[in-house]
Image 1 (cartoon, rainbow, N blue to C red):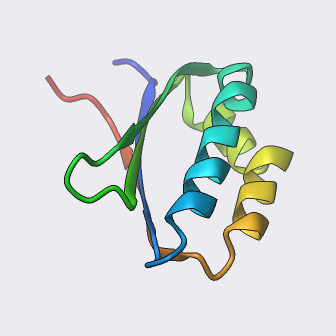
Image 2 (cartoon, rainbow, N blue to C red):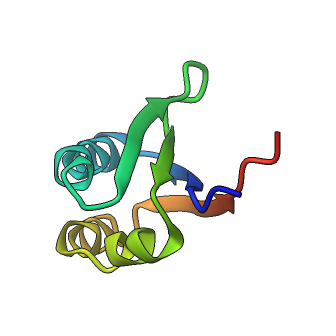
Length: 97
């Protein structure tokens, strides 16, 4: 059984905060892709509801993802978007088929 961890993170910007949130999520891509254990880190924006962003991530294991969650660039994102997010949901998933 693989220990690979898949993360689906849904981020929704508040009304009027789309540009700020978009610029901040884009800043996460490059440093995260360079992190140990990062297999895939893709950002998507909803075609019908542009304030919704989805990160689709694959990590070698839970421990390396936890290291990512404590990273400086993720902490900077949280600080920069404080009060600007309508929703932030993170699902940890395992492949079953």
